[in-house]
Every structure is written in C-alpha cells, then in structure tokens.
Image (cartoon, rainbow over all chains, first blue to last red):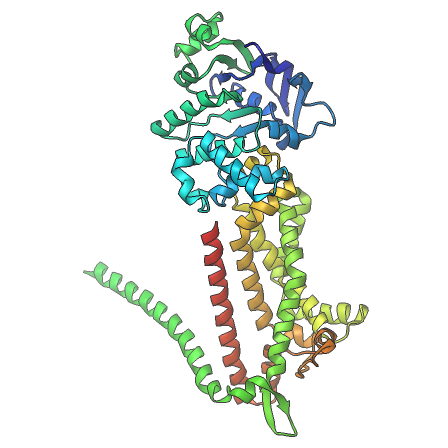
Length: 252
Length: 281
C-alpha cells in the first residue's frame, strides 16, 4: 500500500526572483489519488507542473532539489523529456482537444511515440475512450471533429488522450473547474476508477472535491507544503493551525 | 422634425454611397465585358499571335501566367510560411522578430516597379538569368513574400496556446506539434495569404515587364516545357499593357475579360478550399 511513486526532496522553484516553491519534500503514493489544495497562487499548480517538467516550457525558471520518479531524478541531465511525459501524462484546466477528429485526438500520443499500425491504434483508441467512460457517447462519431463535443465530453476525451500512451502517473490541473456539475460528477467518478491503474495527482480549488476523491491531500500555502497526509486525517484533525483555518474557510 | 430630416438625409447619403460603389464595380466589369467579349473566341484563347496568318491569340500569355504564378508560389510559400513559423514559434519576440516585421511591412508598401528594377539587375544581371520566367518569378516571390508571411503569422498567432501546451504534455517535439497541429489549424489563413499573392501576381505588369519580358510564344513540348522557365515570357497583364501601348484596345479589352474571369475563378477556388478546410477542423 505504501508504494511511493514520486518523491520530492527539498524542491525549490524560482520564477525570476519569485520564490514559488519552498523546500517541498513530499511523497506521492502509487495507485492513489493525491489532491493538492490551497488558495490561488499558493504554488499547487506550479508543483504539479514540476512533476513532468512542464515548467521547462516557460523561460527563466530555476529549480533546486530533486524530483524522483520510481527513485530516479527526472531533472538529471540526459533525461528524455518526451519519455518522461509519456510516463507522466497531464490533463489541463481548460479542456483542450486538438482541432481534429475524436479518433485522431486519442491516437495523437501513440503516434507521437511511433505507433503507426491501424489495428493497434484502433484498439488503443477504443480502450482509452472506454477507460475515460466516454466510449458509448462517441463511438458513432469517432471521425467527427472533437470540437463539437460538450465541455464535459471534451475533458473526458482529454483524459482518454492522456491515457492512450499508457502513462503511470496522471496529473490533473483543476480538471473540473471549467465543467458543469453533472460533468464534474462524471470526471470525479472517473478519477476513482483511474487510481486502480494509475497514480493520480489532482490540483483542486474545491475542498469538497478533494475530500470526495482523494486518498491523500497536500495543503500548500505561499509555496510551502504546509501539511501532507491522508485526506481523512487532514480534514478531520489538521495538525497545523493554518490548515485548520483554510479548511474551515477562514481564508482562500 | 429637423432631426428627422437630417436622419433621412444621412441615410440617403449612406445608401447612395453603397449604391454608387456597387454600380462603379458593375459598370467597369460590364464595360470591359461589352468591349472585350467579341474578341474572346476560340482562336484568341488557343493560339499565339501570328503575323503570317494575321491573327491574334493569347495562348502563350495564358501559359506564361500559369508558369509565373506557380513558380512564384513555389519560391515564396515555403520561405514565407517558414519565416512565420520561426517568428511565432521559435524566435520569442526579440529584436530580430521586430526587425523582420518592420522589414516585411516596408516591403509590402513598396511600389512594384522597384522590385522590378532590383530583379532585373540582380536576378537578371548579377545572377545571369536574363529576361526569363525564372527572373520574373524570383522577383515576384520577393514581392509577395511579406503578404504570405504576414497572413501565415496572423493565422499562427490565432492558434490557442492550449494546443501547444497539450501537445508538449503528450511528449510531442516542437516540430511534430507544428506539423500536426499548428499548420493544419492555421491553414485557412495561410491559404488566404496565397490567394492574395496570386491576385498580385496575376495583376502585376511593371515588375514583370522588366524581368520576365514579353515573349508570347508557346513552350515547345517535351524538354521545352522545362526550358520555358529560362525563356522570356509575358503574362496576360503584361500583354494587355503592351496591347494598350500599341493602341490595340479591342485586344486589350479581350485580355481584360480573360483576366477578370481568371481572378473570379481563383477567388471561387480559394473560397471552396477555405470552406473545405474549415469542415475538416
């Protein structure tokens, strides 16, 4: 049960002069949902992005300390970022299907990694769409544009797209904040389903959601991981005064 | 009461202006068609002017127009789109990009005859290509480059960042992402730029007269089709200019009709392509 998938060690991140993450040392368990909570600008999204090096995309970011996936430092020189992102997939806040067919969206990742065979791709597409509980809704229109789907369907399509490369970890950056309540329920159910196969890390501004879907919760404040632990204990008997204040709605 | 009067007066002016501009267009097109249509017959379109037979024909000019348009696009589109991709995706908005932007804007507003002068002296003289379809096409490529770059750049700018981030999140390399997502998404804008460029190519006379000359013979078949590129060749517009300067107005109007039809056909094609690409994405 206490299989550690990702571990960070005194992780510090600077955007120019801003010290955005301060000495974050946490452990993320395999096949569990870990929720990252905290007020806006607390560093939870930034932390999430360090886990598959999406911060590399923005300039003038400096990182100190280590992030270890299965014990290996992902910031070590010579690490293939494409391979890393295959292992650590990501779903974004705004559903962002590509302007192509539903099928091509899901097949995008496998094609990036060199899979060309039609039979294999078709199998992957179906499995991924089933895995994201959207297969029944789209199976009749796989060749139609993905942009015609509803917001909730788009987000589940993006989850399917992320799953298609068979990642080990799924990072989700406020995946339901742009969705209506009914779609949110579906995505939340999906998260519980996903942890059977994957390690899921989800950023949420919604504490009820964290309580509903996660096994572990990390509370971030001003770049610090103030309190980490099982969701149940963090919400029922927080050890830190700041955690208590936050979950009781005193700020944020 | 006065207010109402003023209102209807303004309204009348606006309607009048709209009516006037439409009538102007219809009038010119109508006039050209009436004057030129009698000249447009089978021999006019399919043969070249022959002093022996005493007939006039523009087949050579039609072929030259096609040559120049295609060759110009072959040079200008890869460079223009490539420059746009570099500026938007790689350069990161430094002074290099601003310099290129300034240069392209300046180039876009330059009178075409200056391009003609440059092309004649540089491509024709220094590079030794003489008066040829190739010299003309290279010259026009320089001329339409800003148009293609600008339109491609605008189209790329309109592609949401979430696509770029999403693709990077899947482990796609930058070039793979550009090839599979950005360029297809920007295609309508790129096509628009190409269409505008074709319009300028077909409509150009001064720059081409100085560089591609005014040859009106058809290329020989076989190897001659390729060799034509190194021979002189006047496009329809160049021929029209020459006909006018020799006071052969009927012939000029005939070419005018053909040009109008060509431009109309190109516009329709572009609209169709744009509609088609829209349906895919």
